[in-house]
View (cartoon, rainbow, N blue to C red):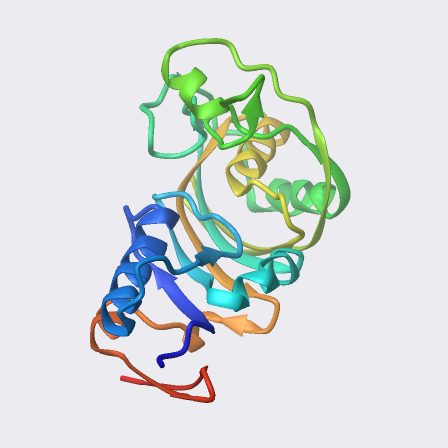
Length: 236
């Protein structure tokens, strides 16, 4: 009998939902193992416009999802200053523009540390947070007002990687529940310029880094070796 257990580290492609990736893996393994119902789940959603580390658990390993979800995460994010969008990223069009002549590297370096530590963050209206049983993004896409409460979270590090023109690239190490899109919004507000996310890569969950992850092409070619009903090796 083939194994129904396992943990895979995957690099989610751009424009794929987290469900798309889980569904692809479930289909592949269910077909190869001849199992109609196979539990597959991920440890932390990524937006379709984000890429990077996703930990996917199969079978009995799905019991470990909470363990992975609470591990520290690292992201590399690129922000555009001087404008905002309703979704805080490229999903929606720019709705407002702002002056940016006052923004210098020195100002950016003064503002970023304001967001390190335990902070309160209001999730984006375009998010999976539930409001009276509905997903916030469903309400937002219908043009309805979404009133979300701030949540406490922890940001361990913010490092300025690049600042060129009005493009700002940062590395963020943070806790579960952090919305990098909302962080972009708040950084833009603090700079007095507005900001939105143009690129996001999750580079680490706990000790799992991007270089340890399989690509979609790898997933198509991978062969799983198993012993005693447990995955012991993945070969590409």
